[in-house]
Amino acid sequence: MDTRFLGIAELVETPPAAVVVDVMRAFTVAAWAFAQGAERIVLAESLDEALALKARHPDWVALKDGPPAAGFDAVNSPALLRSVDLGGRTVVQKTTAGTVGALAVKEASLVLCAGFVVAEATARLLRARECGSVTFVVTGDEGRADEDLACAQYIARRAAGDGADAAGFLRRAGASRAAAELAEGVRQGAHPDDVALCLELDRFPFAMVAALEDSLMVLRLCAVPSPTAEASI
Ligand SMILES: O=C(O)[C@H](CS(=O)(=O)O)OP(=O)(O)O
Ligand SMILES: [Mg+2]
Image 1 (cartoon, rainbow, N blue to C red):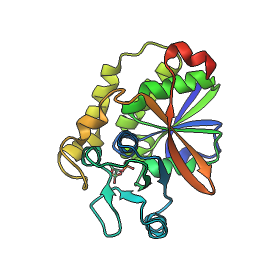
Image 2: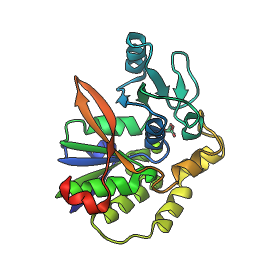
Image 3: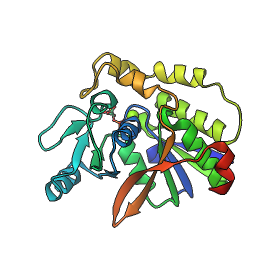
């Protein structure tokens, strides 16, 4: 498998397959939203679009990063979301890095959104789809966020079928600037358990696939069969 690791600004052409990585915290939050029963997550282009969608669909759950804000129902925190019942709900998510990265590759044939919590399922899906070339979008800090780069490199190794000890990759993520800022309370809309939840390797057995649906970029849970059934995907 040919792999590239690019920041959002470095995406000059649409890749055939993309894995958009945001460990802290957009796609850890997305995975928790699915675990809490969400049916789909609409990735909004802007705060205004998120609010407009919420206004048109009052039953949708609008979520943004940063502090709580008028018109939004939730913040970008896995720990704060894990006690919310989202059964059958549509979530609208807008964050600084993760959702922007997914929208930057919206024309790609395959778009997966990932963090450590869905790493193995994401790698298995890439293997099963036999993707020849995969672009990993390292969303944070203009492509230099080490929590995202470490997770992308780990998934790439696993997707290539190489054994990879997760410990070193998780250690890098735990030592990242994002982890420090979350732990120190620099980032708002956060809970003390957020970093630990973002570093839970393979917490969930599913992958997350984003695709355009009626001009909206929609993220959905994708069940990934166990390794013995991979050949049939
Ligand atoms: O909520 C987060 O952790 C970040 C916010 S920021 O980039 O630190 O301002 O957003 P995300 O898109 O989840 O990286
Ligand atoms: Mg991030």
